[in-house]
Length: 356
Ligand code: C2E
Ligand code: MG
Ligand code: MG
Image (cartoon, rainbow, N blue to C red; front, side, top):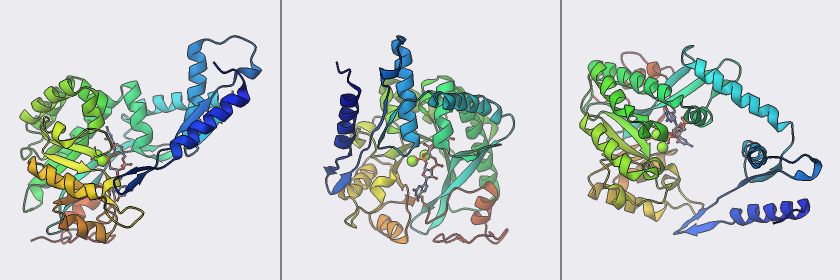
């Protein structure tokens, strides 16, 4: 084993650079970056326990990640202060639900055929009293690790179902509107998710399959057997199932066919054009295969009109992305659904608002 700090640093630098080298996959270049945390024992004489050493190195790694990634940070005692930040974030999050600091935004999912709103994805937001708006990427992780995700997940599911039920009853639509809600790994592993879905569906009358649970392939692959059982039961209860961020993991659609998904959401990295200005070839294949397996396709991250046009030409039926609207409050979503009833203050680009 290596004990010389200079050599350890140099080695980490080599690892970092090696990771950065682009990988060519079909006509795409994939870039991976690493965040490395180091603990150099040079200035401590007291022996440390292995777990403590690892924890400190991990703190340094998180510091590197927060610094934008693709970097190496060496542990400093001051980094421990951020750990208390993390602890206080945990207890803040615990209180956030009671204090109604968590809200839900709805991002439109557009039917490309007529560019009308077909549904929404519910996305959680935390308005922290001191830190302001926090992105879910920051707090969902904490919620997962502390188990708070169970309560938070049920909150989002219930809210979204109530909202959808109101819209289905009061807004005239060609097809019933749908709404999808993200479900995390820890929620899917708990058996109570079934009971939660049952309770929520009993409380809000909804068209069958219109409340969809979004689950990423990595979550499914964590425990495929258990996931398959859970998903079949959820489906029987009348909820829909969407496979989120498809293409970011290693699993194949034909394998995922064993799970009762009705929709796949293609990850945004496959949807946008590559550096050469072309769409990934694999996009067409994913859409075709999904259709062969009887699934609807939603393309995530459509940012330009040409994204929308080409997706439609490729046979993709739905798209979601900034070109059609960012995640918005229920009020604004409602205004978009019925522009005549309550004119939206901001005009959305690209969405044809009136269907009837
Ligand atoms: P996701 O489920 O894949 O959600 C889509 C994310 O892409 C959202 O980020 C959305 O704002 C963003 N997005 C939409 N259109 C575009 C676009 O055109 N370009 C780009 N660059 N981004 C776009 P957001 O809201 O920050 O959520 C991030 C992730 O956090 C979600 O990814 C989801 O995994 C998780 N998340 C959000 N809300 C919840 C929740 O209630 N429960 C759980 N378990 N996870 C949630
Ligand atoms: Mg999602
Ligand atoms: Mg997604």
